[in-house]
Each structure stands twice: as structure tokens, then as C-alpha cells.
Amino acid sequence: MLTVAHSPDADDAFMFYAMVTGRLRCGFEVREVQADIETLNRLAIQGKYELTAISVHAYPHVAGRYALLTCGSSMGLGYGPVVVGREVEELAGRRVAIPGRLTTAALLLRLYEPNCSTVEMNFERIPGAVLAGEVDAGVLIHEAQLSYTRLGLRKVADLGEWWYEHTSLPVPLGMNAVRRDLGERRMAEVSACLRRSIAYAMEHEDEALEHASRFGRGMSRQELRRFVRMYVNEYTLDCGEEGKKAVELLLRMAEEQKLVPECRIDFI
Image 1 (cartoon, rainbow, N blue to C red):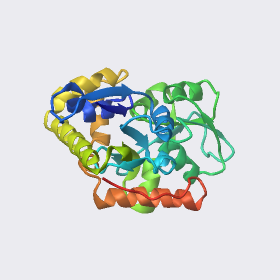
Image 2 (cartoon, one colour; image 1 turned 120 degrees about the vertical axis):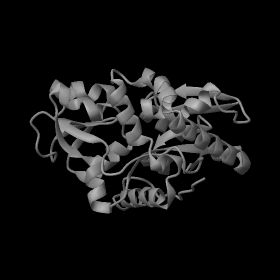
Image 3 (spheres, rainbow, N blue to C red; image 1 turned 90 degrees about the vertical axis):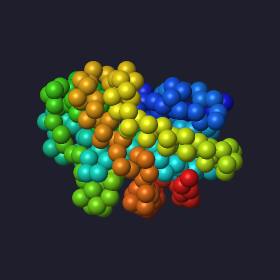
Image 4 (cartoon, rainbow, N blue to C red; image 1 turned 180 degrees about the horizontal axis):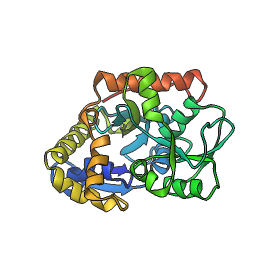
């Protein structure tokens, strides 16, 4: 039995569709668990699940237990988490909602504007908290990146766009990590199965989108397709050398700012 954990979001559901529904035979039984990404980050510190989605920001805290898979990454080329507000123009000195201390969105915000104060809350609460004035601004992840204007919120910054302007690299937001105690052979088998699952979803997009639509939180089919294609892209099947470089650069920058502990990054 292999437990796979991912966030209850359309892009993750799309990636794991074939793997968790039995469309593919992986050579082992699969049990699916879903939780928001910050919860998965914290559970990974405990080594809870054999295969789990995590934020790149969280990896230095779990590197002793996990290796990163080169497949299953969520990377945006010139786009990523969006900071929104109502009247805010600058973030220095402002209270900004983040979707968890260990999320990559929180790390990017700290690199972008170290002089703001952060307030942790569940990602689904952030748009409402900004509208209600509980915070001055908020960092949006998942489908809220496409729908915030309908709520009357304004973009203050696109952190993926900012990252690309400074690095010319994709912004490495989330990846999948496999527990080291499975051993090299089983780790490789898990990686191969997830890669096949992603390829199946891409080749059977309508079928996989139907499954993912349960996690769309009100998105139309057109919006769902657009969102999934944003984060299930060329880097998802294999992040390649460019994706690895992006991960290494982000974590090195964070280390230099004393925002994460030093770690060895292993890719499978």
C-alpha cells in the first residue's frame, strides 16, 4: 500500500487522476489523501506519507526524510501567486495574509518585500479577509489567481512575474516528494507511476478535467482548463535542468537570507 497525498485542487487532482482511480497499474495499491498544502508541509516534517505534494519552501525542513521527484512539479513561467488588495500600492509595513508559513508563496513574498508583516490563514479565507479589511493585502494561490477581479480586488504584485523578471526561470512553487525509506527501487517505481499518470491526464484531458472539476470551487470548464494548463505544463512531466536550477536558486536565496536551513537537494 502506498499513500499519496495532494492538495484538494484541480491541478493536483488532474495529475494524480490516473494513478488514484486505477486507470494505470502501478504495481502497488494506492491510497489517496487530500489536505491543504500547508497541512501537507507540516505532515511531511513528520514523514507522514510515502508520496506527498509539498511546497518547495518546505523542502529544507524535510530533506532528511524525502527526495524530490522531477515529475509532478507546479511551476509557472512568468506567473505565480498574486498579491491583491483593495487600495494598497506598497506592501512595506502592511499586514499581508499568507496561505501558510511554509508555502512557497510566503517565501516569495518575504523575498519580494521583507518589511511587511504576515498573517497566516487558510488559503480559502484570504480573499474574504482582504475584502473585510482584516488584512491590508493577501497572497492568492490556486484558482483565486483567476477570479480575484470579480470580487473587486486589485493586483499589487504577481510574484511569479517578479521572479521571472529577476531570474528568467520558472517559479518553482510545489513539487512531489517521495520518502527515502522506501528504498531506491521503490522510489523509482513511484516516480515512474506518477509520470505515467501525468502523461495519461495530458493525453485524455477532457476525461481528467471531469475528475478535476470536483475541485474547481466554482470555476467554469473554460477557467478550469486554463488553470490546469497553467500548472500542469512542460515542467510537470519533467522539470529538467531549468526546473532544478530554479529550485536550487530559490532555496539558495532563502538560505542567504536565513529563511530556511541549509540542505542537500536530491532529485529522483
